Length: 404
Image 1 (tube, one colour):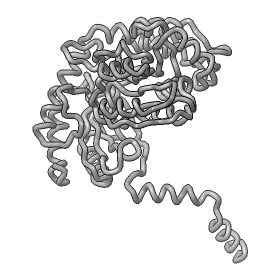
Image 2 (spheres, one colour):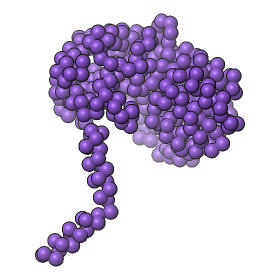
Image 3 (tube, rainbow, N blue to C red):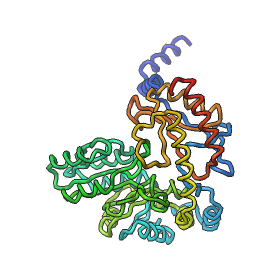
Image 4 (cartoon, rainbow, N blue to C red):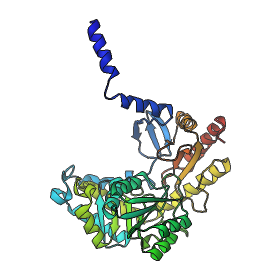
C-alpha cells in the first residue's frame, strides 16, 4: 500500500499534463478564466434564464429578434427533411436551398456570386487563407476580430497592423510595402467597440495603391443597409472587393458567407480548405435564412433597434461611463462599458447578473490587457422599460464599485 502510494505520487510529480493545470491556474490568477453559463431562452430573447436566473439579456447578437420569428421558425420546421447533408458540398452535400440562398445573398450584396460557409469564423479564415500567401502583405486594423486575425496567421502572409481607424498610418505602411499582392482588411462595425470604419477612405487608398479590399460586415449586415437615416455603416460597402458576413447576427440564423466576383468564388470552391473539407450548411438552416431575409428588408425592426440604441447610448453617456472609441456621431448596437481592470470587470458582471442583468465581461485576448469591459448588445426585442431597469442597475452597481 505504501509503495503504491509512492508510485502514484511519482506519477503525479511527472504528470505530462501538468502544463494544463499550470495554464488554468495562471488564467485564474490573471482574472482571465472563462466559464460557460447555462442559457435557456423564453418566448422573447430579451429575457433569458442564466443558470436558472431570469435576466434581461444584453448579450445577444440576435439584433432584430429573428431567431424566434414565427415565420422563420415555421419555414425551418417545414423544410426539415434530414438533419444534415452529412458531407462536403464538393462530395455529396450540395443542395438546392444552398444555391437559392447564395443567389439571394449575391443579389443582396450586388456581387457576381456568394458562397456559404458553416460559420462566419470559417468564412473569414477560409477567404483570407486562400487569397493571401507568403508573398502577400495584409494591412489589418488593430481592432479586427479574432477570426480575421486567425485567417491572417493561417495564410502565412506578412501582417502589418495599422492603428485603429487611422488611415494616415494605413497609407504610410502601404507606401513602405514591397509586396506585389497587398490586402486591406477591416470590419464595418467593430465587434468590441461598436464604432465603424471609414470605408470610402479605405477604398480611396486602395485605388491609389492597387490594393485588394476585404471587409467583414457581420455586425452591420441587414441592419444599416436597411435602416432609415443618413450616415449608415454600410456607406461605401459596395466598393469593396470581398464581403464577408454572418447569418447568425441580424438574420438570427446560422452560418457565414462571402460575396465577391465569379472568379474569387470559384477559387474559394477549389482551394479554400474550410469550405472543401467541412460538411455543407444543413438545408433547413438555409431555409431559415431565406425566410428571414424578406422580413429584415421591411425595415421596421431596424427602426425599433435604432430607437433602443439611441435611448440606451444617450443614458450611458449621461451616467458617465468610459465608452472608449464609441464617441462618434454614429451609434451602433454594440456599446462598450470600459472598466479597465479585469477583476473589477468580472465583479461588475457578477453583481449585475445577481440583479437580473446579463452582460458578459470581455477580457484579453478579445481586447487588450487593461481594457476589459462589459459589452452591451442592444436588440430590437428589448422594451424601453427593460432598458430603464438595466440602466438603473448599471448606474447603481457602477457607483458602488467606484467604476463611475
